[in-house]
Every structure is written in structure tokens, then in C-alpha cells.
Length: 375
Image 1 (cartoon, one colour):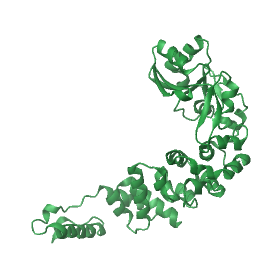
Image 2 (tube, rainbow, N blue to C red; image 1 turned 30 degrees about the vertical axis):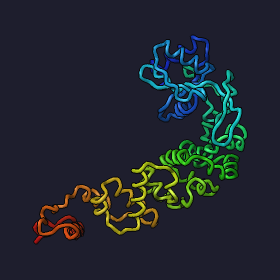
Image 3 (cartoon, helix red, strand yellow; image 1 turned 90 degrees about the vertical axis):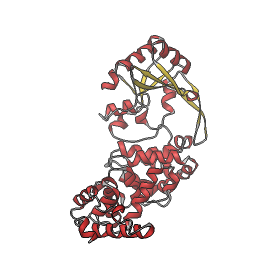
Image 4 (cartoon, rainbow, N blue to C red; image 1 turned 135 degrees about the horizontal axis):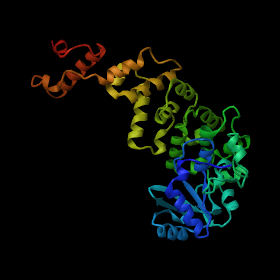
């Protein structure tokens, strides 16, 4: 079996593989690029595994005229920019010590050792420069079956890095077969070790939840997280019941889905703008402002998120004509300015009068003119 694609045949990618091989080393594509190419999904990142050390990789790449960035050299990884294409090139590794968050590794020359330290069998697939697939652990049948299965002993893989619990559910959301369900052994291991999530940095947890909630439909994965206790550990107070309704209604943005879940999002280390948006959506859910007012006050995307979140949580349909209402509100321009009321009004009196006129104008469906408002 072979993989193919524009990423594989890029001149820089092939030149880098050739340079490593000419120097006597292996150059094998690994992980997401191989997995996605095999299932005809987009390939966004190119990872290369090799028995060359980081020093050898650097010397070979620089001699070929490529730029080298030591992005994770202590773990054997350098980024090589070859003819405009970025590649993460990593030396074969074996974990020698883990604490559930970080691993101490030693470099290896054995492909089987490198494969054995990976998380899931579908991520332990390799391919040579000509696209020939190398499957040292028999992960290809799992990928074909869309079965997300831990490499070797699930408990051991999880205790090496507790983030793999969240990755298990995230990979199921993206690549699993809903009809088949989650791998029973993996699910049980995740449930048994869910408390380990509390040892992870909140940045890592937040990043995984972002990727999970960005899947086309993460509902089944999140429901399984709730059942196993993982959701409570990752996002205390979250409730998964309204998520499938929100997805069905068309909530595609991960922040809208996060707002639907609820929970203590402040612990996820979101950016200020992300935290503000989720907080706003939640605050407006219980407010009865109609769609057109939401569009006027918050713009198209946020207003849509509020309406969908509200409908999902109340287990109802959005009001008739809601999208048109949001669009009308988003393009409406309040015809009265502060200058129109000055100098008769100043300070608080001015602000109160502007807000009163604005609300009257909104309640009229944005129909009242300046003259009608000030008459």
C-alpha cells in the first residue's frame, strides 16, 4: 500500500528525504500525514522520523541548503524548512522515564522502538519517500476500521502522559466510527485514570478541548467523556446533554459549543477575547433580547452563537426568521448621536437619554427615524 498527495511529492520534501537517505539514514513519514493520506483527509503537517541524531539532521539539512530550527532538540526534534515546506524531523526515540506529563527519552536506531512509544495504532503508521506504507504494529486494520486503539497496554500508555486520555476522545471524534463506538479497553483505562487529568497544565487541557470541539460532530465523544468522568475532570461543572442539539442546529464554532457545555471555563487559560466571547454568549442566553437586537449589539457571528446556544439549552427551535433578523440588526445604524442632544443634555443625563432612544428605536424594528425619535 502507498500514500500519495501533493505534500508527498513536494520538491523540498523529496529533497530532504533524499539527503538523509544518501547520508545513510532512514527517512520515514509518520503520524498524521500518513494517517490522513490513507483516509483521504487533508494533510496539514509533515512529520519525518529518522535514525539520524538531531546533530546529523542539522548538518545534512544545512549542507543541502535548508533552514534548520531547533524546535525541540532535547526530544530529538528539529524543524527543517526545505524549499518553503516545513518538516518536523525527529530521531527515533524510546521513553526511559515518564511522570504522566513529561517523558525522558533516549535516541534509538530501531523503528519498532519508536513505534512502540506512540499513543494510538493509527498514529504508528510510517511511509517511505516513495509512499510505501510501513506498519510495524499492525495499525492499518485499525485505521481502516476507524478504531482508535492504544498502542500496547492502554493503562501504561495513559500513565506515561495523562493528556492521552483527552486525545483518545478527540481522535474518536475526528476519526472514529460512531456505529462501532469507542474501544472498550481504551475507554475503561481512561475512566480509571481520569483523575490524572488534574495534573496536566490547563493550557494543554484547553488546547485538546479546542481540537475536540472543532470536530464535525464531537457529541458522542463528549457524551462518553461525561460517562467516564473525564469531562468533569477536564471541565468541572460541564454538562454534555445540550451539545448534540447545538450541533444539529448548526453550531460549528468550538467556542459556541464550549458555551453550551458550561463549566468553569476560566481554568482553561483561554485568550482574553475567547473568554470574553464565551462569557458574553452565556450571559445573553438567559436574556430575552430578540435576534435582531442581538445582531445589532453583537454582530452576525456572536448573535448566531447566542441564538443557537439558547435554543440548545432550552431544547427548542430558534424563532422563525431569526437569521434574517440577525442580519437586519447587524447592518442597522442608530440615527441619533450624542451631538444631536448636546448641549441641552450632558453627562449621565445624556447617556440615559441616548440609551432610552436607542431602545425605542430597536423596539420599533429599527424603523423610527431621527425626527420621530427626537420629536
